[in-house]
Image 1 (cartoon, rainbow, N blue to C red):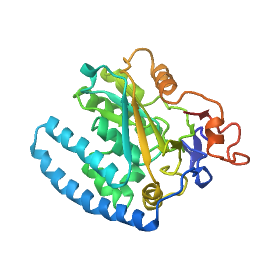
Image 2: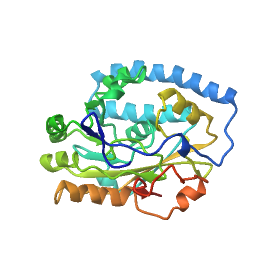
Image 3: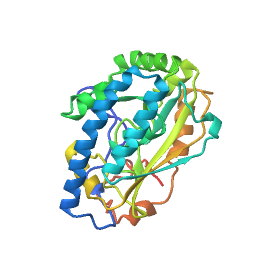
Image 4: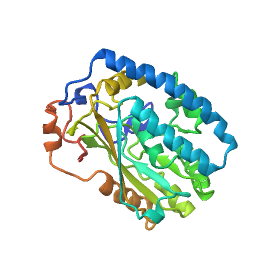
Length: 297
């Protein structure tokens, strides 16, 4: 697992992460408080979307400003604290046509990245078929990708390259699927080719989750999770913090494999298994040695 696996003759990225990865060292909030957060998210979210539709009449900078602010409000409504650690010089923080790449843990990743730079996201086509979430994904111009279908990969890369060439940022998760955050998958190099073809930089971003300073995997969208089960774990977290670490822009030099390796070294550096021991995760029988590709900070 962790490497591409065969599914009906199609190679699809796979992750060994599942329910056994869900751990936290912090007592959750009451069900009542969690219910209040969900109700608030529904009310506020509908309002933000309704007003957001009208922003199509505004210039792009104004639209982006609105959605950055809306994303931050949505996180706070769920009880999530946003911490942005931006390593870029201030004069390079306004993006035009960059490929944003990040590790993938939760659907919160998308909201957190929007707080840094609104972008069009590449996502597996099944996302657009999810009840409730699918219509929102279509509204925001999510680019559906049939994972593992090599015949459609080149046209998809060309589409992303064209968007980048027009000065629009595009965000991708190169692991191709979600991991729990204590381990990560190998970054697949395919979509890095779009940055090379368009001649635009790559923006590496690391996403990590803590609760009261302790590592947590509660926000993970893992295994057979639904949007609902993951959301419930999120709103029951006491003081969930998502840290968005933004690295400096990487120029599209070398080949796509080099770019993918460079981004992964920044985003998911190898560290000892203490990350998993901190959560008291029992890996025996769950993560075969071959599947634990990387243990990350």
